[in-house]
Length: 420
Ligand SMILES: [Zn+2]
Image 1 (tube, rainbow, N blue to C red):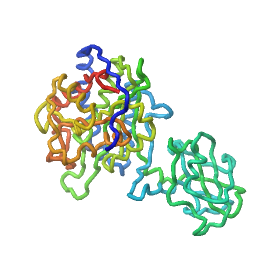
Image 2 (cartoon, rainbow, N blue to C red; image 1 turned 90 degrees about the horizontal axis):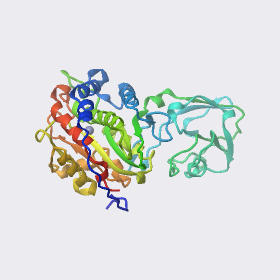
Image 3 (cartoon, helix red, strand yellow; image 1 turned 30 degrees about the vertical axis):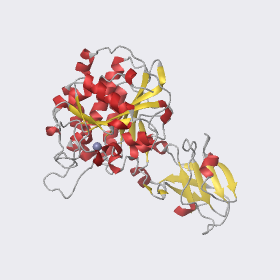
Image 4 (cartoon, rainbow, N blue to C red; image 1 turned 45 degrees about the vertical axis):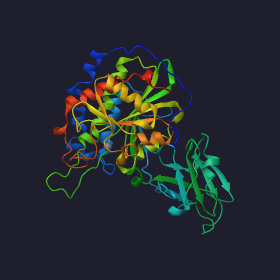
C-alpha cells in the first residue's frame, strides 16, 4: 500500500478564531458569480486543453491570484507554470515532440538526429552556437541528462561525434535527474564538428503547451510546511456532434472548484494569519489524465506538503443542500480531519456514495497521494449528475447559496488541526 502519511506527529491546538465578517465580504455570491460566470462563459469555449482559449483562462486566473497578492512558487518566474501534456504509457513516457529546428553547418538536422531539453520553454528564444558549452561524446545513453543536467548551468550541447546510424541514434527514452533538468541541453548525433549552428523554435511545439497557475501565500511561523488548495480549471471544450449547444461549459466541473480556490486565495491573503505556507493551484490537463497536477509534483518537495485539499464539482447539491463528501475519506487521517472540520463549520459530511467509482483516484488529489502527500477531494456532486460532461453543465444550474456555504466551510478548516 502506498505511503500516505509523513512520519512525525505535531498536533497543536489553538483556539479557532471566527472571522465571519471577512468571510462574508470576500466569499460572496456576487464575487462567485463573476468568476464562475467568466470561466464557464461561451467565450472560453469549454476551457479545452486543445484550444487556444485555455490561455485566456490561465491568464485570467494568474491575474486573479496576482490581485489577491500571491507570489510565484519559489524558483518560478511567473504564476503561470508551463508544461507539456506528455503521455505516459505502460512502457514509460512517450518522448516530448521535437521542439525545434537545428541548422548544423548550414544544413537542417533531421528530427531524429537531435533532441532539445528546455528548463523553461515559455522563455525560449532562438539560439546560436556561441551560446552553448560544447561537449563531444563518444557514445549516447539514456542517462546523459542525469549526468549533465542535474545541476544549473548555461546552455549545453552534447555532441555525439559519429555518423547517425541504427547503432548511433538517440535513446528512445531518457532518465531525468531527480529534480528535473536544471539547464538547457541540446543533444545531437553528427559526424561533422559544428562550425555554425542555429536552433529555432517550432511554433507547433508551443501550441501544445499547457499552464498550471500556482500562487503562494508564505506562512509566518511555519513557512516550510505547506497546505495546498487545488482544483482543475480545464474542461471538455466543444463537442461538434452536439447541434443545439456544442460548448461544454463545465460550470460545475470544475469552474466551481476553481472559483472556490480563487475566493480562498483572496480570503487567506486578507486574513493574514496563516502560520503555514498556503499554495493555491489551478491545474490544467486534469481531463486528460491528471497531467497538470502530475507535472506540478515535480516542482515541489512533496515532503514539505502536509495536506492537499482539492475541490471539485461543488456547484451542484446533488445529495442535498450543504451536503458534501470527501473522496477516500478513510485513506488518511487528513480525511477524517477534513470531515470533522467541515461538519463543525455547518456542513453535513456524507459518505462517498460509491467508492467503486474511485473518485479518490480520478482527480488531482491523487497526484499528491502518489507522491506520499495526504490529499482528498471535497465534492458535492459526482459523475451521476445528469449534466456531468454534458453541454447542460451551465452557470444557470449552479446553486450559489450551497456553493458559498461550502467555500466558507473550507475556509474555516483550522490548519492547526491538520497533523504533520
Ligand atoms: Zn472535474
